[in-house]
Amino acid sequence: MSEFDPTDHFESDRLAKRNSLRERGIDPYPPSFEPDLSLAEFEDRFADHEDDELPDERIQLAGRIRRFNDLGSVVFFGIEDESGGGQLFIDEDTDGYDLVEDLHRGDIVGAVGAPMRTNRGELSLGVKDLHVVTKALNHPPSDGLNDEARVRNRPVAMWDADLHETLRTRFEVISATRSFLEAREFVEADTTVLQNVYGGANATPFETYCEAKDEQMYLRVATEIDLKKLVVGGFERVFEIGKVFRNEDIDTTHNPEFQMLELYQAWADYEDMMAITEALVCHLLDTVADGARRIEYNGETLDFSRPWDRVTMTDAIAAHSDLMVEDLSDEELRAEAEARGAEFPGGFERGLGIMELFEAVAESELNDPTFVIDHPQETTPLCKDHRSKEGRIERFELFVGGAELANSYTELNDPVQQGEHFAAQLERFEAGDDEAHQMDEAFLDALGYGMPPTGGLGIGIDRLVMLLTDSQSIKDVLPFPMVSTTN
Image (cartoon, rainbow, N blue to C red; front, side, top):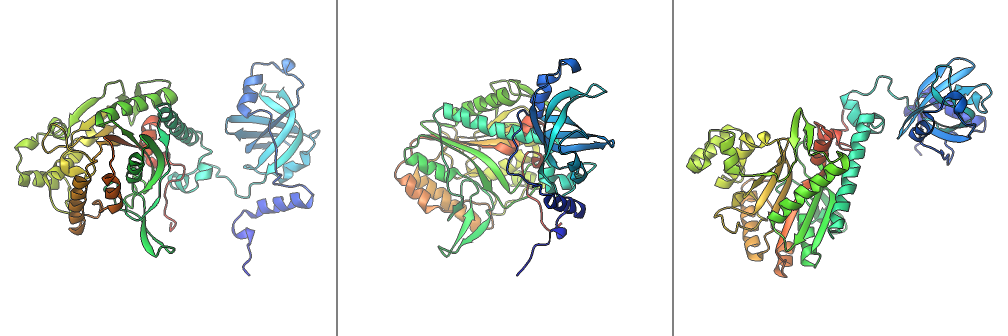
């Protein structure tokens, strides 16, 4: 039988102190300790009191030891909790003074005492009773974490105030998004993660295998298809904030596992989705940026004042290069795109050439929020044709800070046309385009029962939080970025 050897995993001196506590009948991991105040509340309550004004009030505080100063008969612990920092004053009259010899930086302690000021005037808790709450068996880094360790050792990295605040902002953004949509009578749904057919985006999926079904399955690349089925099922305003998975690059704006908001509204179109996008982002600015409409990102000032600019891909290309797409033949367009790194694994189509050229010359130049509208038909199989522009579809992408933040369609609800689009995508897949959409018979069947006119919207939560926190890497806004286990 295999045995666990703690010395293979944890610091030997800390293990010895843990064992010493247990031998003395002290539980280094008691089931509970409830502080009366957070450290910030303690500071707020007593910061303005002079020493002779501090009440002889019994207070319980708790926190992780971040600073340890042993002067012999007097010991100072600098401790932290989520709210901030504070100081414990411990002397030989403290019940539990003898625990000090078994404590290290990083341990979590609880203290009962009264507020006081040291000889230097520092607000502290004069500890009458000291308790071990959690004995840490790993030594915290003395000089912080380097960039690689900051990603790999995420629990310790979160002690950093900047990262902690960024992640808190992330969680607030998700909560505020949910509240915004629920106030507009959207219903939150949860849909399948394991799927027989992946769809809703041009992306490479993660593959897995279901033993119970003896079938190949995929992690979802989007929540779109299931949410549209809910619209067919009569849910006229529905959304999901969920993880999606794309087996693609890891870089400053991409992580194979990321979080998306997708929403669908019956009796709406992409114009309605532009309005809801502006309203939602401004609501989030109200929530996490005190209502500011101008924020700093990557050294630039971004202006979110409404209404946001609208531009077509061809107009954006013309504005940021000397190219007039309308004047280019297919061959010239392809040559210009390929000269800038474009590839067409499933075969060249004019609309795809326009999109690749836009991404190469214009996308990074769109700093202030900009709706790029009315894409070429070839750019997606899931969108309705434009009602007045030949060869265009009713689609927009929102670009901010030089990156895509949102994607939206007036959703295609003609099952025959949808089937034709899927068939064309299948041809592209067979020709070598691994990101082409699959033929989805179950979705076609659902559309066959009738989906009302619908507007759909997807927003990348991670990139949105990057903007709102002036973070230059997606790793800085993910609680647990993907890392290799081989290094």
